[in-house]
Image (cartoon, rainbow, N blue to C red; front, side):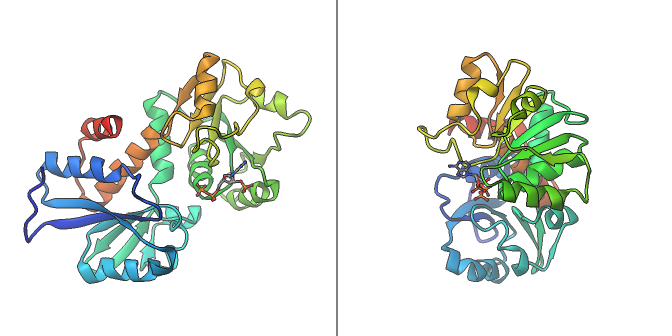
Length: 278
Ligand code: ATR
């Protein structure tokens, strides 16, 4: 247990809702193991209170924060600076408080790539289908193209996929849209190696699949950024297809955030254990 005293540093996550978050468990375990006098708490912030919440990071001297749904984009104008990566992605999930100067970072994309590499998947040259064109998709698409993958983006609202694709073209030309309902889409999909679901389909156990199951084959690796076994992952596993859930991305975005805040190498395996047992 962390011994809280008058010198304990505070880190936090701001979100709405946030009570399901596993981040406090993994970061507090890391502080405890490294003997850092700090603790990490969750604050449920109503959207109308975001500006006040960010001001209180400065006022209370909170050392660092994670930002989650629905604030990753809205928080940007409230910060003093953001990293190039966070600017290119258009979202911040990590804030470091440097003596009152709030700096924004995005560790989601790099965390996603780290979880792929941990599964011995090198994105370079890989054909990847990304389902969804929302906030979570942006970080993943950006990091995949930066790693040299060829990305297809599909989305229920194709206009949003086109917009995202056009924005990301400045970083790589290896990116295009794909409407999975088009004739011929199935052939293109049969040729990709990795399928990544970034849509919210799968959060609820009775959600529909984001892609017809008949489009999947054993050459695919199916990935979800939701950190429980979604209907998509369950169906794919049933067909003998390799699957990766979102727990690795959650872990690694947290590991990178911890390094940004403290400059220390956190105990990754112990943090992973916290995610598994919770
Ligand atoms: P996040 O920050 O988690 O990405 P978001 O920005 O609201 O959240 O994006 C949600 C994504 O899930 C979008 O790609 C959305 O598709 P639309 O752009 O068409 O809204 C997708 N999504 C949500 N509900 C969906 C559903 N029922 N069927 C298909 N896609 C869905």
